[in-house]
Image 1 (cartoon, rainbow, N blue to C red):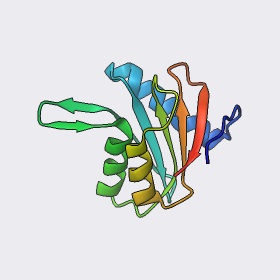
Image 2: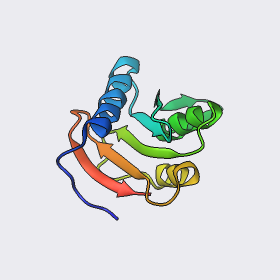
Image 3: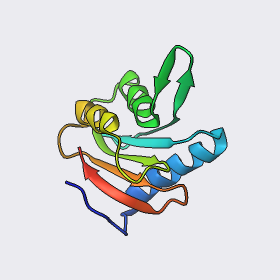
Image 4: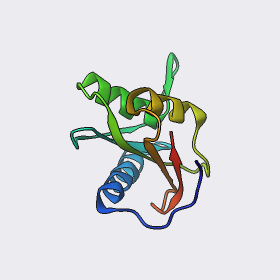
Length: 117
């Protein structure tokens, strides 16, 4: 389901803030943060190499899985895009299951969309 949202609970605001911070710190096009089923967070930027290209969400989800996460509670991505990337939705669904929220925020941290994977 797509829908605009203006207010976030404190835990979701935290992952948006972390995603925004990694984007700014690393100077990448997008930053992401995921919260796993135990409440641990993983933060990553987009990876762009000649032989490998990952979105920030793909990178953060891969980090969570590699660290032993068995599920996701929520995912945030800070990007210029107004809509969720279908690739990001697929990877969130892979680890988080259907219904896991993907929060899409602009570079200013303002939430643009909340999408259920």
